[in-house]
Image 1: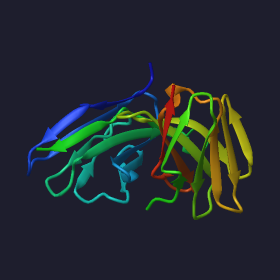
Image 2 (image 1 turned 120 degrees about the vertical axis):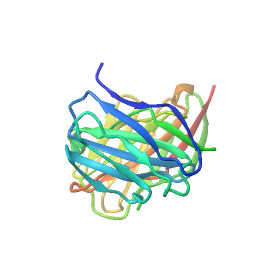
Image 3 (image 1 turned 135 degrees about the vertical axis):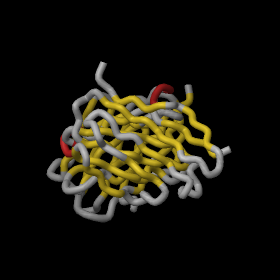
Image 4 (image 1 turned 60 degrees about the vertical axis):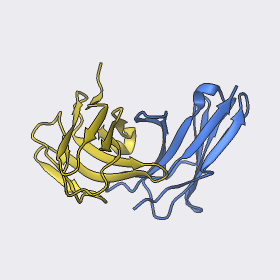
Length: 113
Length: 110
């Protein structure tokens, strides 16, 4: 089945640690996106990539980093510089968002302990 | 920045009733999309309406778009308990990424 897979589903981070969230898609989509969701605030764009080896900052990129070495993969690293990382992280991909919208993964819930 | 704003923030109805959610936005759009999110899960694309369309149907869903008022509405007819979820509108300017609103939480009671 084609789809987009995020792992892990739950992740716990200690203060000062970097953690990496995985996002893999087998839909052959060119574009991929990372959103952060906090209660009552909807989705906020962190980073996006429209093609391999290229990515752009979204509205809240500070404290995060990404890479896009393969079409299928778009991992997100939450660095120690992100002061409030506890949130629900959603990855999405699209082929032609103006006609078909985005396909989302099932999310990773990150908690700082 | 978030462009779409859904109204109401929360809606509680009985099974069989219709549910209407509204979305307002601020700038020009190429299209507007509605998504559904079950608790703790990812979003699912429901329907897309282009700026030159006024109404669109998909099963029990009816979406309207009024570009002069910069607003859209999502109507779910004959609601079921399984429709309980959060619903988000997303605006597509045509040259950049989607911008999502904060969502409407719908509770359908049996």
